[in-house]
Image 1 (cartoon, one colour):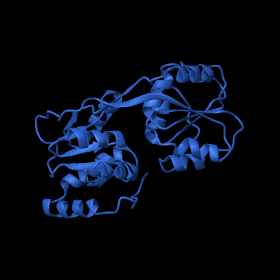
Image 2 (cartoon, helix red, strand yellow; image 1 turned 180 degrees about the vertical axis):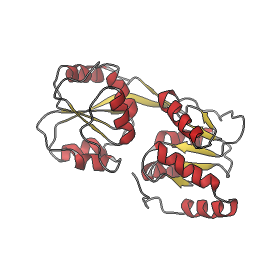
Image 3 (spheres, helix red, strand yellow; image 1 turned 90 degrees about the vertical axis):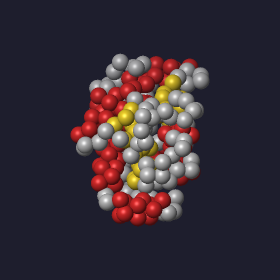
Length: 258
């Protein structure tokens, strides 16, 4: 059984992909998106976007895409879109947006590098807990960025999870998920594989007190599922050795991907 930490369309899609790989998914939403504490700046920014005030829309999560799309029925002609990776780009496409820039590596640093020079204003709608890497990087290039909180990321509870059985693996897809897993998967069975979507998330997981057994080859849930399948198919003795090796890796040692 693989614990999928988010519900909604994302959880449904990952569950389908997990089943296609012979895994048994269990969707247990650990985080959810809710309105900003002060919704006025985001409302004003999306109204300005709809009026054509921005030349670029930069998004780093599918949730940000859905929040914008929920307020703007269609992007005005001339607005270009940059997405941090394939999954965010897919959410843009599903919303009817054409994506102009996707960096080779799904990271804020690479998105900063991939952005072309522009004199137009850039809208960056984000989570309240997003790191300043992207906004600071774009401003460091002299670009005009409106950095606006589009949603808050909050946990769905604080008590121990009541699961029907111990999961074989837990998908850790963000730092906020890592913190919820550390808080709520208590006690945690040491045999449960902690699978992180990228090196940055792996660092967050370690900081939350979790071991990191698996990191996906790229920052995508699809590659993360492939990595989980490979780990669970490994003979127990070799699996233990490989997991111990990964747990002992320095937190600053980045594996492929973000």
